Length: 328
Image (cartoon, rainbow, N blue to C red):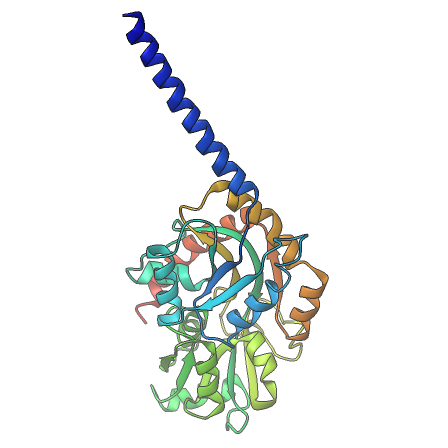
């Protein structure tokens, strides 16, 4: 009997020792994180604003005062970001070595309208790096010199004004829906496979107008006319461009593109915490801020807690907004 009790007690000790060893090993591994380069999934095309900015804000990752390891950008574009974000939920490893860039309102709006695999609960936010308003643009040779010119033409030619954007239910699409509703005109939205092809369609004259990122428009302003900005106030990068509000057109900041980084759900809390401590500091690095400013890329650094709050607020707001707009 005593032998049986001793054997049972010994077995318990062995199991406990194994658990302690495994736990120690995991904690040690996470404490050393990262030990190799990290991949970051960008769900839009190379050269677009999200890709362009992601490369800038992660360029200091290899510095020992931040991660001590580089971040490698991997593009998985398609369906306005849906291809990449669905992949992150379904196939991305949960070991902390695969991150993703998020775009709000894009992924939240898509999760409301479509049957996506992702929503605000399937990603673990780390930090936000920017907030890029949507702007209404036309080609340099376009006959339209103002928003009113475009709307007057649209009223006389219902459905014939084609407007490009980076996909369905991304910020550009939401700005388009808001403009159509506020102005009471019928226009046709052309969803492209990202901001770059959407911009090229405008420059080449394949569409009559487009909504695109302020940062992309800023870099291409020698080939464009920028007619209006969908935000609550003018932007320092384009101080002469009026907001739609200033033109008495009821468009708010719902389409402003918040960009940041997150992990797929299931990554260790210790890894998320470490990344959440490091990334805001890295985004605020002087070299990073200087390069972002030179490229016309608006910066808005937010911590993990601030991003969680922003996601929750946008979820509620977009549910109400899209309930009405998606029918238009």
